[in-house]
View 1 (cartoon, rainbow, N blue to C red):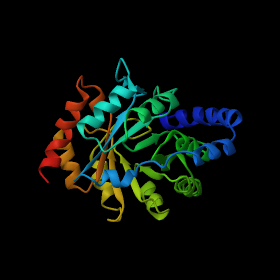
View 2 (view 1 turned 120 degrees about the horizontal axis):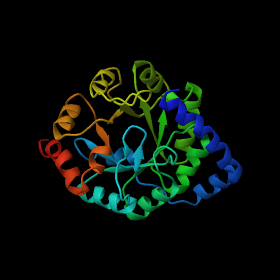
View 3 (view 1 turned 180 degrees about the vertical axis):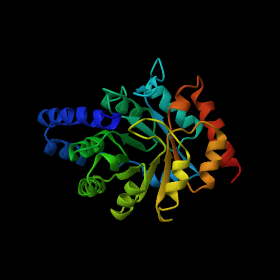
Length: 263
């Protein structure tokens, strides 16, 4: 069993339990009372290349990434460095995330937040809305095409935007055909967790120009940022590299400012 299959297998059991504990109708009622979130796409387009900075405790491939892990302090440091949006891991079992870190980040900053989760059920979409998310991650490899379309519709109905993640040409074709406006190209193979930045260049070439493209994973240097911008990335999602630095604000500036200033 590869990592994605292992995570999804565990997620199915979690979601079933959450649905028994809190019915979907209650989530929808709570979401209806929530304040409208800031616009995710607009924020990413406010710079020559946008940054989604990630709040993540650990991962299956890297282990513990930041200790102590203080979500609110990390979020404020990212905002001070100039990040346009934040990604907050929701999976607890494999990534050490969950609703509490998300709420801590939401209370700490005004930036748009991405609900980064292995979404397999509309319950998770409406849960994201109750937490104040601006966007929800959908992974094409984890969903059937009709499931993807249905979840995208729920996300739009809830007043959020979908970041639709792809890893290869076949998944990209599905995302484009199903109308994804924001595509995340993950440079990490979710089966092996190895990374290759060439994935962004290869897949960007088959995505229509009017779609916003986010390059994800394996981004470590200012040179990487300049390179990815040159091949058509509109934004980046970066976590591990920034979280391993003692001064997160400085790390954001060192990574992004060369591309911002050279525009």
